[in-house]
Length: 293
Length: 281
Image (cartoon, rainbow over all chains, first blue to last red; front, side):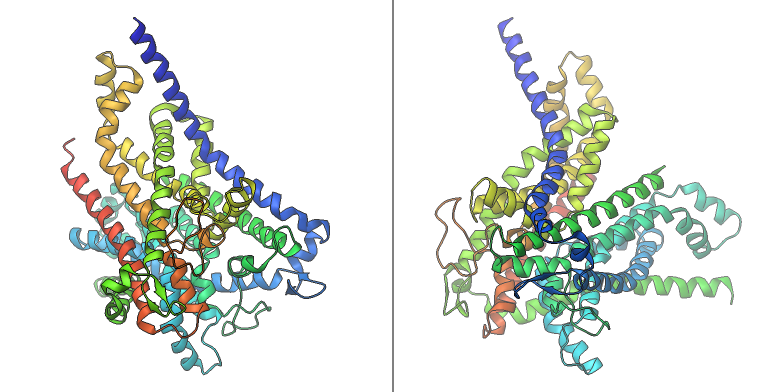
């Protein structure tokens, strides 16, 4: 009897621990936001939110310092749009090929290859981009430096591709068989079926895939810091050096003083990034649920 | 244009696009192996760096990364597996479990540099762990939590429902059922997630920038409260911050890091496909 009671007690504790672990994910998201606020909000005692978001100059160590992150936002936006323009069509095409056309073995091989591409550390991709792509772009366009927004876009495009391909591929595979069978039975070719029926039915999942790919690009730090040249100025062309939100945090945190305005400003950039990715992931999740239904 | 011809052209274009996605893996690997292999030697792998990192080995960076990755997994695996058990075995589809799932999606989407800020704010400053292996490992651990939870969930969900009903009908309690008839069958899938988490943690730089990584520290860490060098940060430092580091040392460091990460991922891919092939149900 006693041992049974002991067992019951033990199981009660185990089940409570399991419940607690479930709660932890929610707690961590809340903690991340809270600690960003805790360190970052003090900036807005001396600075208006408006000046921070739309200020045109980022001179964190001049006297008086200027904390306008508009150049950084535009830098991130330019690099991200460029990366999306390159990666979205290529990735969606590759996803269609892998899901609908590639035969069994090739399909498994390609999926493994894409998983490996996703696994390459961003610092390695940045290193290769800096050493090979940078000089190439410099010579191609005959510009003073190869570390530009375009270099960042191309590098980041390759980092977005695995995300977009694998999620879009899942969505395409999830399209019911009957859709394809009905189209083929009506005399459509394989390509007509793929393009007009399957791709259309998988559209919400593809939208989610693109959004998550873009989310990854906006948050990418090391590669972008190594290849974009890091000039915190409002960009006028894609062939100029730019600096992104993420690279600014990574590059400047080491030289800021804990508790100072510069330090708080970097955390405030973190808040902006957190909110952007939170929204992108939330909306992408909605689309994914819609595609499953 | 006949529909047959347009199909041919379309398939060729899709195939080309697929090549563009997959080829970089081969190209990056080829470049790094070709230029980095000459740097790999006993001395490179097992001695301290010398002459401002331009000579000698990278032992402290390799060991530092191993410590960080092991610490992260030690923290994330129990927590992540328990969270997956909660979601699959206990919660059903209620409002709270949907909130948990949304939180996991968002944890996966938080930029790595924001994890760095978070680790700095909470572990380094608030808990006063300082820049240390402990702070870095915990930060990486929270970052890989979504990877662990997602794989563990998939593994648990792939165990057929009737394994549970049979166990329960024989009088086993809920926990006994999970412990003896569900978890053992999900183990390979959980292991796959663990290895993927290891690989992810080994390659990340931004989360360790402000929480643990030392620029140049040619000795081995003595405790979890010490700073340490780490492979990805070391590669960043010698390729952008320190002039005059020989090219093959840079490529050699990239090769060691890439080999570590890709081997871990390859192991996970193989383990997963074996597991799927062997399943009898």
